Image (tube, rainbow, N blue to C red):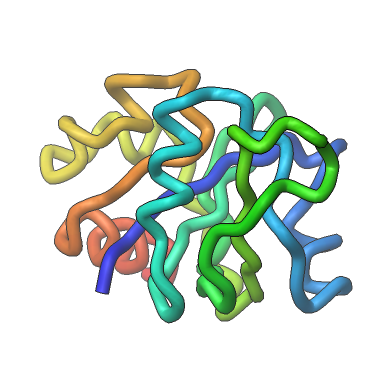
Amino acid sequence: MNYFLVKSEPFKYSWEQFNKDGETFWDGVRNYQARNNLKAMKKGDLVLFYHSNEGKEVVGIAKVVKEFYQDPTTEDERWVVVDLVPVETFKTPVTLEMVKADPLLQDIALVRQGRLSVMPLKAEEFDRIVELGNG
């Protein structure tokens, strides 16, 4: 299994809206590195959902239910989406400050590449953030 983190601005697409919808395709990625990370996602992989700009916190876990396909919001075939479903809402959102303060999380892309919207995580990084969110 692989682990990832995706970012969404809450006013554009929030965790609450995602839970109401029950499933969504992850669109709007227009960065090659982020697109390549979407292409690496496999059915069953787990994904942390991060509210960017407002909140700046990891709020829950999603799961990949359909691997990458052409982004239906554009004719440009370079861009892809994956389908995600919500799995679990954290008891306590994990703030960017908490991530930056944790010695186990110093090397994650959320800290090193702040503008990247889709990023891979190591299993131990994923597990640590889940631990913080359910603590």
